Length: 458
Image 1 (cartoon, rainbow, N blue to C red):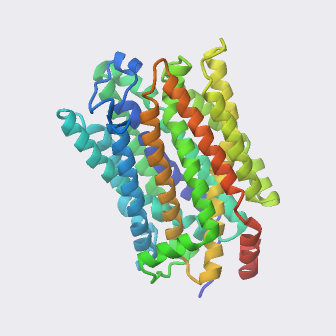
Image 2: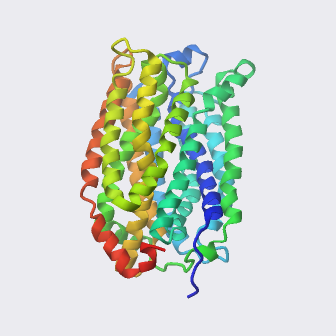
Image 3: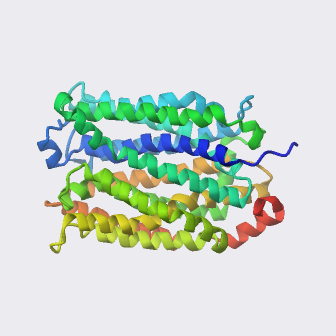
């Protein structure tokens, strides 16, 4: 078998721009879906219509909470199927690139439709329409992102490359997410002419067009056959899923990841409410604070990259979990003790920046290590399934977070529900850090080094 090329900076840059694109689309839905369909009193006063059924409807849960949770679960069950199809694809362009070419445009289109089709009828019609549109959104997301993520260990064929690629895509992930926070700022330019709802829709359409262009760049500029193993896997989907979850190190990683995604999703979903309802700032400050958080975080990227190679990934990831707990706990106190709103916003941004840098880079690299470790044990390359399994873990966490947030946020008055969501996020993050301490990094790295010395250091 011919030796594959190692990814250079151009390849890593182009690959990371794809991440920027899908992070924008994912960020738009994650950050603004609840804000759009379950608006706060301030947003309603600004003219936002009520499109879907509001309030508690079943077992303490809201319609938007039930819809988003169920759709995420559907996505989680679809991911292994898509991963299996990607792992086993026999195509001249490789196993991952064809999916990225085929589904970048549908993914972008469905992001716009999620905010557009609901709103054409009564509440019940809109509830059903939103459910259908959101299912289609998550299916197209998986069809692009699962093969995309499977390229991370395939392009990162050495430990150094793995951390470098994770750093690149982390930077563009945060840039993409920050751009998603621009929605209310850009919408403000259209609001006078279109009204608040259509202004949001026009803004999302513009961002989706940019995102599609970004996602197509790696799909048409990376020759997968030159850099990745493209031999199809012949393991059936069910057997591949079972083998993946039998890996004890992945079990630890997946459980900690579920807890992490519960906490971070509650925090990100709550940001627009924390900023407006707790801090008393304008909604446009969401972008300012997130951009500031991202810029501060970027300062720590180089040190994280260096220390991960010297100290290992486990110590830094565990530290980040516990540091994030402090950021979430402080968020729960925003707007109190007579402290100015901007001071609260700046404090949250600074505290969250450091763990964002670590957890933005290293979990992907840890998972790549586990996937390679598993390949040394089984002799099979099933990277797609590992990343699909991680997506499933993320999906469970996000689904639980949406149910919890939409239900807890309805408690009390004066923003008390929003404060409780931040405290719940703190508890889940603490549990996630404790679980991750059980990850046996030394065992994984020794097995990889013994099997493939090139992977250890190039």
